[in-house]
Image (cartoon, rainbow, N blue to C red):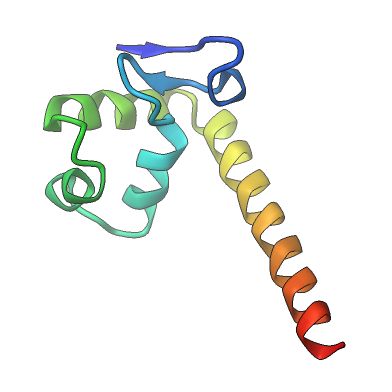
Length: 88
């Protein structure tokens, strides 16, 4: 139920049939959201698909953590750019 397709989300692992990356589900999980709460935010996914994404995360934790860290780095860079622009 997890696929990788070149050209779709940079080839990152996604839930089959959706453009929702495993690291997106894992990120919500790490913030303390329940399966039901993740389902409310990612309403296209069934609870079973959320469980599959979390199972993939636990089996490939370092890979998914690397994707999450990459996104955090990009966000920090954007925040700095916005701060610099607003202070000019």
